[in-house]
Image (tube, rainbow, N blue to C red; front, side):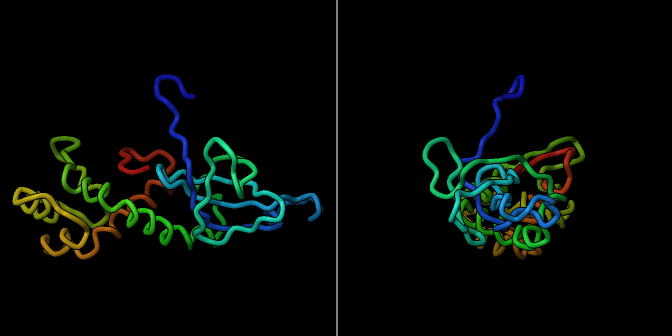
Length: 188
């Protein structure tokens, strides 16, 4: 646990890539290598490397339990990963998995649009979303005054120029994962 704030731990992850013989550049003989999984956390979008139990082979986008207690597939959590440490396959799978997680928790992300506030006198939290400038931000704020947004579809229908709000969230999460020290974190 880090000093001053509790550590945020994931309970469930989604598989981004399954490596049955570990990493290709591992110099150990194949019989000594353990099967690995690269995964992303469901709650905080933590990128993780996992060792799976013998005889288990999870599929892409499978949801695995990694919390405390008995685990079915995962033997142990090895370490956190940086975006650049993800395999090419994991990087390709990332937008799809994040999109699935965002869709599963749509209310949480729609609430972001309903409750986002200014960060500074010149910067609003909505402007941190890729493709949202001052004009679109003001359109969202004006529509928000008329009533809360119910879901992504309601948001897209009411705000002209905002065609796929879920995709904006996904792109922001990926941008936060790529940048090891973003100035502002919204979702990771």
